[in-house]
Image (cartoon, rainbow, N blue to C red; front, top):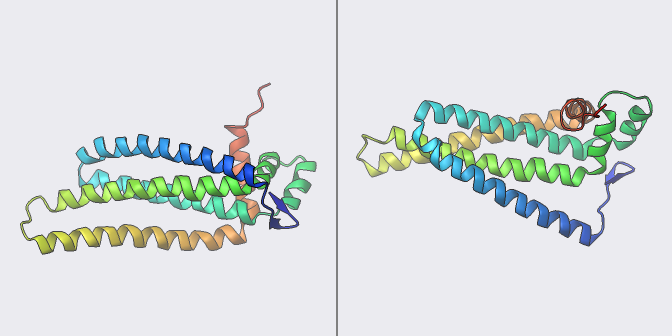
Length: 189
């Protein structure tokens, strides 16, 4: 929770409960997506694997942006916008009040799962590229190069997005709040 622009930690037992929940959530999601990546990605070929890697990098970057933005958003501004009945402010305020959970989910859970899926996709690309290569040193060079390109691309776009997330945090969370109000937090009338 934020108070006066700073993140204030809740009780230790509350933090432990959240850590246990996120442990089981991340393990469950990792099992599901790990199974899917082993069965689906291993049979789709290099081009589709590259497209999947691009998708996973994009998801990871966007969720990292949400995590940074919610951690740096101004809760007081959302209180003000909520009183003015601005669309997205109610959910944005809720996100700000739970910023440590939102940040953990966005940056850690989604980010780590996307990284795992990128690794699986990278392995598929390496296997496809190395099918007719017999030189072990060339296979190692291709494998390391694919890993370096995936890691470098992810880090590059996350670095670009972090500056945006820090400078435009309120706007990002307000837009996310609007989107969530239309979907997950829609009032049933």
